[in-house]
Amino acid sequence: MSRVRVHNLAVSLDGFATGEGQSLEDPFGHAGQRLMQWFLATNSFQSMHGAGSGRTGIDDAIASQWAPGIGAEIMGRNKFGPQRGPWQDHEWKGWWGDEPPFHTPVFVLTHHPRPSLEMAGGTTFHFIDAAPEEALRQAREAANGLDVRIGGGPRTVRQFLAADLVDHLHVVVVPIVLGRGERLWDGLEGLEERFEIESTTTPSGVTHLVFSR
Amino acid sequence: MSRVRVHNLAVSLDGFATGEGQSLEDPFGHAGQRLMQWFLATNSFQSMHGAGSGRTGIDDAIASQWAPGIGAEIMGRNKFGPQRGPWQDHEWKGWWGDEPPFHTPVFVLTHHPRPSLEMAGGTTFHFIDAAPEEALRQAREAANGLDVRIGGGPRTVRQFLAADLVDHLHVVVVPIVLGRGERLWDGLEGLEERFEIESTTTPSGVTHLVFSR
Image (cartoon, rainbow over all chains, first blue to last red; front, side, top):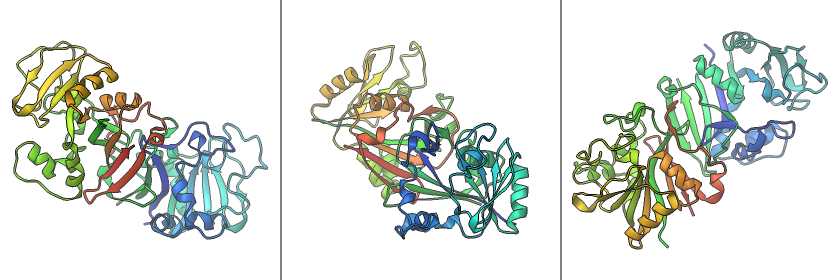
């Protein structure tokens, strides 16, 4: 059975996985780059975006687990772009550029479906209005036996965790206090009982937690 | 200048430093012993309560920093006991037994002052109705040049952090999701900017964070 995986999801000490006030310029709102600083430096991130080689090391080794074995991604609409409500601009094709780093089908959860977008490099965005179970059914079918990644944001990951659909959860605790934004852990009391948990702090100062089962 | 220190303050992934429903039997409410499991096993904890020797190791080494150099403690009333409102029972002398492990003056913050309690072993509880600055002034005087520990609970620590009175903060992130209780980080957005931060995960699975300046 293919697994459902979450990778590289950064969260502040107070449990926020994104800040307040998302916009085109600030995908993480007032958090800016603070949650993802550890990741931006890695080779995994740099090569995702076609840049020169980034740092290899422990953060990179853990971050690199993001891609192998994944056949499809499910993401919330706010990971595709900052728009809310009905789509105003069908020409804008998301934050991810002409050749998005996913290279698989990507199911974007939205109450406002629109035609699929086939991008260069194997990524196709499908826009679906579906509950977690149904979205996962579609993603599994598209993944062709490979694993499905829940790509975020926090609300989407939380929904899949609440529905007990996640088998592997990689969370990165960043030692900052964001104060406001979107909380990851709400409604997930006792989550730890469903998983084996490993944790390690890396020299960048973040703590990687892996929940698996 | 003597420093103001916080030690061994455990917090869940969702930022709760104690659970809901504190009672005489459950000082941490529904959290039970889950936040302090890493600590109960240590030699530092065991010898605090006169028991046989506990485990030595990294958790113990870090936990043992609690005592040296401390001349007084400030604690919230709920660390003394679970009562709310006017004191009903002056005979009950708190959770800490006949010989509390503090061995210094301890200032208990309460809106209901009562006579001081001199206990065996050098601990005297003083009950004061004071804002953080004034409580610290009194504790510093009593500490005679040594450091002052803010002993908890979370609301008390949060007040001293908000007033920017803390120089050393040791927090232990325990990989559990409590869901409810008393939050440590509320109102402390950007706290990390005031400190140098070190972090390390230990084999027990918790992550120790030290904020210092």
